[in-house]
Amino acid sequence: MKQVDFKNGKIFGNVMQSVLPMLVAQVLSLLYSIVDRIYIGRIPGEGTSALGGIGLCFPIIIMVTAFTNLFGLGGAPLCSIARGKGDRGRACDVMNTAFSMLVLTGIVITVTGELFAAPLLRLFGATDGNLPYALDYLHIYLIGTIFTMLATGLNPYINAQGFASTGMFTVVIGAVTNILLDPLLIFTLGLGVRGAALATILSQILSAAFVLRFLTGEKAELRLTPLKNLRALPAELTGKNPDNKFRSIALDIAGLGSSAFVMQFTNSLVSIVCNSTLSKYGGEVMISVYTIINSVRQVLETPVIAIGEGTSPVISYNYGARRPEQVRKAMLLMSCLGIGYTLFVWILIERFPAFFISMFSTDTELMKDAIPALHLYFFAFVFQSLQYTGQTTFKALGKKKQAIFFSLFRKVVMVVPLTLLLPGVFHLGADGVFMAEPISNVVGGTACMTTMLLTVLPELKKMDTPKTAGSPY
Image 1 (cartoon, one colour):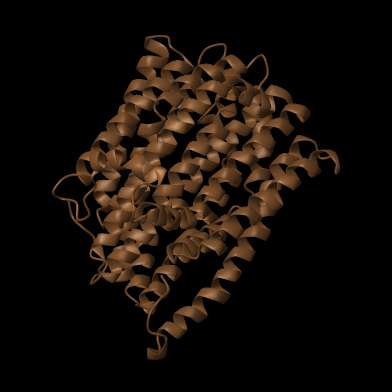
Image 2 (image 1 turned 90 degrees about the vertical axis):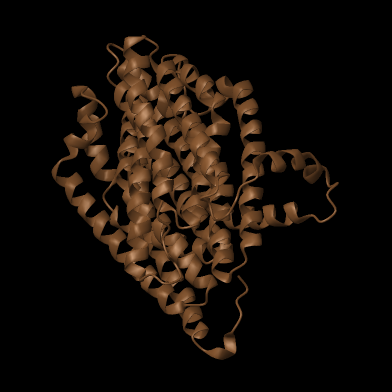
């Protein structure tokens, strides 16, 4: 499959060749969970409660994604920067270290989740009505954790090598399988939410198999050695390997990936706080409403995430190759695409809110509560693109401290306190939960973008002069 030429190609062409396959991959990846919810919401007689039960699993599912991003999105920019410098050995070491960490973490999450599923779901706001659905889904979903983490966590290393179309195809395999299996297992075989979870893990197994096959094959520029990595893992963890290369690289990956990890971790925290608060002020129905709105957000933010992740390897490669003008062009293109898209989406939501809600439920009573909540939640959606642009740039340039700070600032400093204060202290009830998001988007997005421009642009300007030759990254 065609490899994107980051070295000689034009910025617009490189970005679009990376973004478009990434967009398709992101959309199809989203279908793993979204299609589940679409079908689950239509289970006769129990769709609304079942949908709320699945929503309660979000914090744990998001945590799986957080650890996946820690080693996947954390190592991919380092891999791209090493390629830009011509250091293929370093690039391979980064990818192989990430593989080992994904496997190890997947095992720990699976065991921990299976042992403590029920008390965790109670903590997240589960009731006697929706807890059985949540447990049915989660117990099966956790079995496939390792495959989910490998499929998603290694895909950025395919994109980092310029094989964006291959990265897209790895997701296509799983997504199509999931779409075909969902109705068969949920309705035809009558497995309900358990069928949705089973369809998801079977699909992820296929995706993981394809990713491993490509990265260990001859077409890959950087070769993965999974068996060698797993055999060496005990020695690495016990400190018996004298060169300590594994530990050093793992710390580098985790340091840069911590921004993506924190972003997902805080999403999990926000989900827990929102579900718990809505359970108090709105009951099971409002938890189902939040599940739907969260699902709509995942659908609509996918393109802007794809724009960022598709541009990231272009920025990283050119930064490593010390070509500041190319970095600036990629940043500008990413900003324009993100702002234009989010503004267009906001207009669509204002005009056709019922359409987006109806994708997940046709319950007329639910619709009455969901439409005003959707308007509140997406009021400042355009500012979300500023957050993604700033975060992506910091991460692509290896600036982990800034990336981590703004991940924490918007979610932990802004969203969580607002979610707790607005409903009770300011007497806004359930509406206060949905208002926390736009307020944090305006403040957090503006702060992140402004800081990025004030710090990154001067550095790129200095990079143009000979006296600053050499980069710490």
